[in-house]
Amino acid sequence: MAEQKAPIVKAVGLTKIFRDFWNRPKARAVNDIDFEVREGEVLGLLGPNGSGKSTTVKMILGLLYPTAGALTVFGRSPNAVEIKKNIGYLPEESYLYKHLTAMETLDFFGALFNLSKTERRQRSEQLLDMVGLSHVRRRPVGEFSKGMARRIGLAQAMINDPDLLILDEPTAGLDPIGCKEVKELILLLKKRGKTVLITSHLLSDVQDICDRAIILYGGKIRAEGALNELLTDTDASRITMPLLKPEVTAKVIKLLRENLQGEEFVIDHPRRTLEEFFLSVIDQAKAESVETSGVTSGGQIAHFLSAEEDKSAVLAELLGGGEKPVKSEAEIAREKAAAAARAEKLKAAAENIRVQELTAEKTAGRQPEKNQPESETTAHLAAANEKLKDLLGNK
Image (cartoon, rainbow, N blue to C red; front, side, top):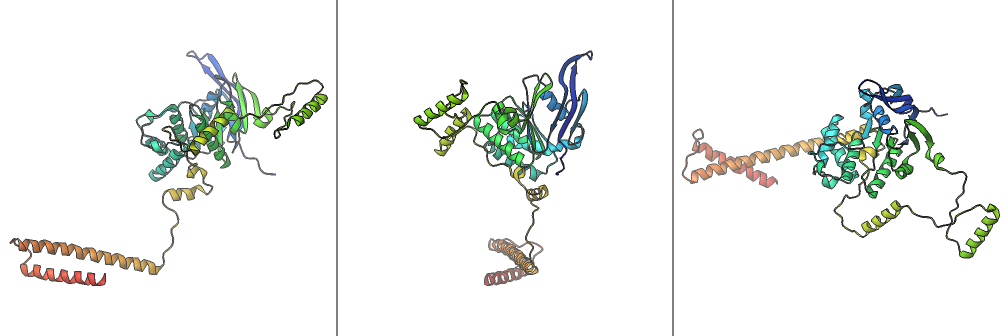
């Protein structure tokens, strides 16, 4: 039997009470909840406004202290500085420095994780391409629309290649194309073994990508489990088949009425969701090469996020330290000889220029430099000409 891995996040009796100025209890935001976030899963944390979602997330990030209960992240206290490098966070509102460009923004966040300059540049370029903002990399983020700001916020949350990604309303402000790309990205990160915690009011997005869901209300967990189990209605059946001929449909209806004994049933045609229809229209427009000045579709997932090889190999490649072919001694000797020949040619060319300058001075009636006799100049000219003849003869 395979050994069960420890959860990435574990809460037992987690409670958070906000107090007023006189330390009197004002609001019980989170009320004695137990839950786990397992490695490699996508978990949806759901609930209406004021249900305790954001408070729970802030306690996981170490921004708030629990009033009671136990909470661990990567087996340690959320306040441990060492675990921060393994967490990526996209807040509900992206707080960005408006005067920085998109490229400078990602470079800034990469520097906070002590990434090298080369690695920051490589990752920033890949992430901007991935979220569809490579064409506005030099534009200040203060000029971005809300949807573009969400995209750059998502990119900064992944600059450190985190093991735990916490996304608060990741698709808020995005168009349907952006929503689809973000969902596909999350599923790709899951395949790579990343753990993702999502809070969202867009339940259709959660349904598309989450393995499990926790529904909060009044600070307490009201429902929890795998989405397949929570959403399956075991009291009804549904049959989907190709379009039937009218006479066959009549027979099916007659058979159903005989067996259902008066219970109502519905026969209709399958329907696409509005999102599916919208995306099909956009895909058709792209196929027809229709131009747009809006946000473009994102590119492929960033290499450092999708690579399956060991991270040290990726880092070596980013820093230009990959393996290089080993040269033989003969190849090294030939390269040294060629370098020496090039140096000799450069030296001769420099001497030739100097000789031409001296000749021009003599022609103009000017005297050579004081420390260089005329006889020495003539000898120098003859020697340089001989060298140039040799070079031209060996060329």
